[in-house]
Amino acid sequence: MTKPAGNTNIAVFDSTLRDGAQAEGISFSVEDKIKITRALDELGVAYIEAGNPGSNPKDLEFFQRVKGINLKHAALTAFGSTRRPGVAPAEDDNIKNLVLAETPAVAIFGKSWDFHVTDIINTTLEENLAMIQDTMAYFKSLGKEVVYDAEHFFDGYKNNPEYAIATLQAAKTGGADWIVLCETNGGAFPQEVFDATALVVKEVGGKIGIHCHNDGGMAVANTIMAVEAGARQVQGTYVGFGERCGNVNLCTVIGNLQLKKRMQCLPDGKLQELTPTARYIAEVANISLNEREPFIGNSAFAHKGGMHIDGVHKNVRSFEHVDPEKIGNKRRFLMSEVAGRSTILNKIRKVNPNIRKDSEETQLVMQRLKELEHEGYQFEGAESSFELVIRKTLGKYKPFFTLDHFKIIDEQMPDGTHSSTAILKINVDGKEEVTAAEGNGPVNALDKALRKALEAFYPELKEVYLADYKVRVLDTRSATASRVRVLIESSDGRYVWSTVGVSGDIIEASWLALVDSMEYKLLKIIEEKASAYM
Ligand SMILES: CC(=O)SCCNC(=O)CCNC(=O)[C@H](O)C(C)(C)COP(=O)(O)OP(=O)(O)OC[C@H]1O[C@@H](n2cnc3c(N)ncnc32)[C@H](O)[C@@H]1OP(=O)(O)O
Ligand SMILES: CC(=O)C(=O)O
Image 1 (cartoon, rainbow, N blue to C red):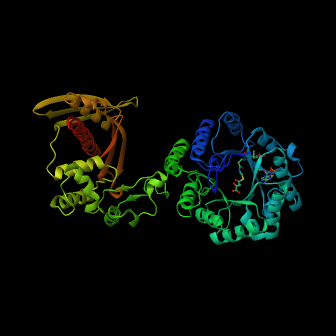
Image 2 (image 1 turned 120 degrees about the vertical axis):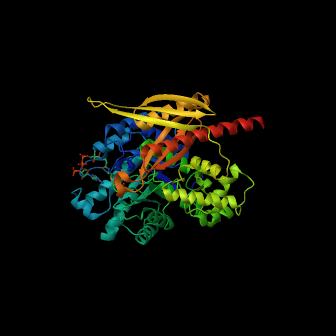
Image 3 (image 1 turned 135 degrees about the horizontal axis):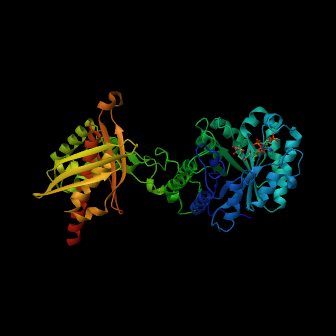
């Protein structure tokens, strides 16, 4: 038997590794599946539907390998269909593979929609009922926990309610532990889901679950309505991956049920892992997380409008529906032309703690920020450049070096190879330094030459490297004459910082961002040394 799902009263059933693997663009390796299984178990979901052993050798291999892993919370679940028409369960190849998986739980899907029975699996309505009942009874005889997924239940119920309910009764008679109502085509409305689920809870009884797809954008609403009607198992995928438009996003469902409806979905203390787990799963799946995703997205608690930021500084409840820390996310304040003084005050105070919201300096920095954003700068993702803007505006900036000149030679060879060389002369406290460096492109060569020149004076820069480089054309209509914004992410292995440059020339924009990056790092070195002496 499966382990209880801790102190939860909603059983979370995650199908990232099965329905999620049916999403366009997703292909998990066995290793990926093991990593995600461990992460979901650590989070405390009740069931991990990890694949379809009758589908492919990869899933079979996964189920063999995962046997050696001791899961703390979750019941590992193998997925497959009912027996085929006219074949006994013990003789059905798909069912034999499910047995080989040796999981404590199985999820078996069967047909609820009469049209699917007659036109898709080409059998009789009676045989379909027998297929469902026999399959449940077979797995129960093997001591498994059996989750019955009533595929297309809501469409079936609309078309032929008596038959749809009869399929659920067949599953119950066969001994299913859970009956899960599937909104397979994802087109139902919340009220329809509520009404049908409430009827099933009353007339069929037992433990009822819900499985929604998002084709009409209603998956979360439909899931919540089913829970309101009495469903106690919620199936979905962790960040919403799934066939077509995806399955219900479990992060959104868990966030809503646990924080708004006070229905516990994860064991005590685990809700804070909601966001880090989403990042981890997206990383393993090699899919970039939609940053606007509720609860877990990077933008979910990012405040940009000046009036909103002012409100949040006064009381976080003014523009936040829940506390981001409860789900392991964080509040962010974005620098931009729509910011007000409250937004920048915290940043200014790091440079001069005596400045107030109504100080003249605050107004000056605000004005400079808006001018620069008008020129094409964006400080949302380049807070280190913004700190330098504040210093320059407040007269707290002294350049670490001055540029005499640089020159870039780009060579395209007849054999198709390409090389870039940068030659550069800088001046530090009256001392000149001339360097040259080669790179795989002009910016790479310039970056190397600048660091080489500066390292002669500031050896700490040896550990700095360029972690990311992004270019954005600001006015696409004017094509090559348009301005470009370059965003650079630098790192010294411990910290990451971001800087920005804007110009009509991509090399100049890159140079401006590179200079900010080096100057910011040098400033931080000085600050660290100063605090060590305090
Ligand atoms: C709503 C859902 O998400 S259900 C799960 C859907 N997931 C998947 O399909 C992914 C895994 N599937 C697979 O790897 C393959 O489809 C397999 C290995 C299971 C089957 O492959 P094949 O035998 O080549 O069949 P194919 O995929 O072409 O067709 C599906 C078969 O399943 C049968 N089938 C579909 N649903 C059911 C059901 N509930 N009960 C019994 N048989 C079913 C169909 O009738 C069809 O059989 P037929 O060829 O005799 O008409
Ligand atoms: C079972 C399933 O994945 C569905 O009906 O959508």
